[in-house]
Image (cartoon, rainbow, N blue to C red):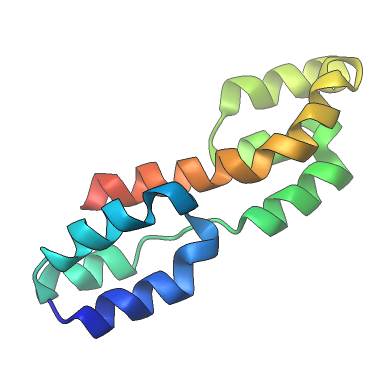
Length: 111
């Protein structure tokens, strides 16, 4: 595949993916043919900034965990009001990294 497509994809989505895995993604994207690139481009990646804002505003209800697909932890936070606020505060700092990891895993399923 053309390196310009790979570079454009990474420029658009680099803030949504873990920084330490960008080179791995770049290598895998370079070996993908053009027909599969359209499928890869259609993968919906979640924005870590948006999830962090939602975590600050509605984190004690578990909405942030539901949005990234952690249904079990979302239910736990909902029923315990974020483990009495402790897990809510922890998620304010960690949910962005977790969102990037979820995005990476979704992308690897397609690659």
